Amino acid sequence: MTILHIDSSISGDTSVSRQLSAAAVARIVATQPGAEMIYRDLVASPLDHYIVTDKPCNDTAGSAFSAAVLEEFLAAETIVIGAPLYNFTISSQLKAWIDRIVISGVTFSFGEQGPVGLAGDKRVIILVSRGLAYQAGTPTGALEHVETLLNGIFGFIGIKPEVIVAEGLIFGPEARAGAIVGAEAAIADLLAQAA
Ligand SMILES: Cc1cc2nc3c(=O)[nH]c(=O)nc-3n(C[C@H](O)[C@H](O)[C@H](O)COP(=O)(O)O)c2cc1C
Image (cartoon, rainbow, N blue to C red; front, side, top):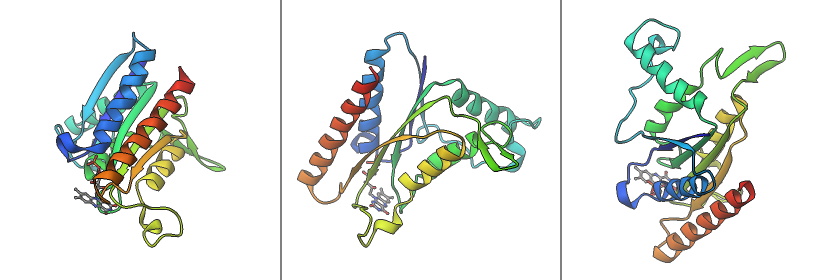
C-alpha cells in the first residue's frame, strides 16, 4: 500500500492542518507497517501554476513534471491531505496540486450521461482547519469553500473523501485546544474502523 501525504499550510510549526494530517498518517502507518510513504509539502516545494501546455500528454518539461505529479497521485491507495482555509477557500498551493490531478481522460471523462469519475479506487482523508465556525445558517456558513470545494472536486473524479474539521480556532486558546482534541478523536475513530 502507498500513502501519499500532502500538506499545504503556510503556518509552519503552528499549523493545525499539519498537526492533524501527521496524526492521521501516523495512525495509518501504525496499522500498515509495510506501507510506502510519500510526502509532498506544497509550501516547502510549491508547484507552479498549471498552464495548458503542462497537460500530461504534451511534450514539454512542464508536461513531464505534471505527469509525475499525476502518477504519484494515481499510484497511491490512500491520500491524506492537510487543507487549511485561507480567505474562505483552499490555499493557492493546494489549488496548484489539484489542477495537476484533475485531468480529462485520466481522472475524469465525459460520457453521454455527463461527467464520469475515473479515480474511484482510492481513500482520500482530508483534515480541514479553519479560524471561524461555518455551521449552516450562521452568517459565515455560506462562505465555506474548503470542505465544499474538496468534496465537489474529489466527487467529480469519483472519490468520496472522508473529511475531518477543526474549526473555531481563532476563538481563544481553549476553543483552539478543544477543536484540535475533537479532531484528533475523530481521526482515531475513523482510522480505528479501518484497522
Ligand atoms: C492568510 C490567512 C487567511 C485566513 N483567512 C481565514 C478566513 O477567511 N476564514 C477563517 O475562518 N479563517 C481564516 N484564517 C485562519 C485559518 O483558517 C486558521 O489559522 C487555520 O488554523 C489555518 O490552518 P493551518 O493552521 O493549518 O495553517 C486565515 C489565516 C491566514 C494565515
